Image 1 (cartoon, rainbow, N blue to C red):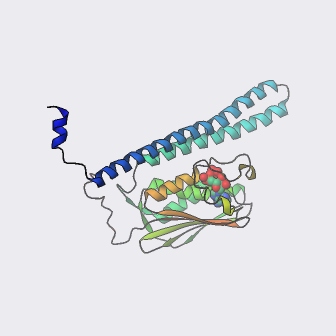
Image 2: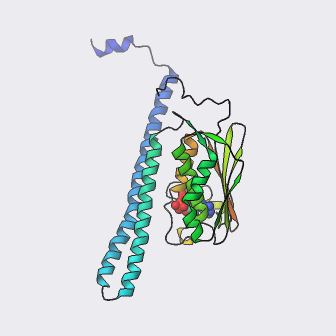
Image 3: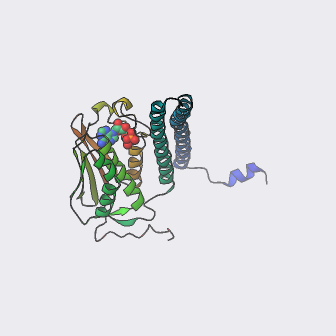
Length: 270
Ligand code: ADP
């Protein structure tokens, strides 16, 4: 059958359908460009610690007759390799998160356990700075979603609170119920975030003036992971901060109430 004939038998595309197809193509192109940017950023971010480790290992060889210098270079190699390990781990985490939709098969997640875990995971770093980690707020709440994702998100917020706080301060993690949501809040008495930077901190690899942190610095991926987890749960994340006084991050996620069903949406196979 000549193609023209076939075309003649197809109902004309409605304008809505055409629009939807165009939007779909636009979206596809946008996703593709985000992916390309991400790969470019990742390559750039990985090259920095890898390059530093290479230079430092040359320096160790050159300084073999100066034990003090060897010590110093070795310590910096250790710091850089830890940074590299953190980067790789967070990149893997981010790409894994992007692959699954937590609302496909939500489970009941106990908030107290998630908070305790985040506090445990950060207790060594907090202890080293004499920072007290406090679990406050309402107990016994349950949310709906993906346990691993929520744990990673709260863990990242607590890790940041510890990293950007002075010695001897406190970090408070608490939960508060809304009607259909749970607010998970992490408050610190740390360095705070300048008002003109606050819109950008959730961007991938974005760091507020890396010079103000010690060189051990983070990856700039922690908050983009938190934002992704919030969005994929149909929730959100907000920040309130005063430079020099502290910050409060609030992650809002769907709450499991006695009447919420945790059955996956119709049509999903289990
Ligand atoms: P990083 O690995 O650098 O911590 P994040 O994505 O977690 O990356 O955070 C992005 C930037 O936002 C950080 O580099 C830091 O400048 C700022 N930031 C995040 N959390 C806090 C906080 N609790 N207090 C002050 N600044 C923060």
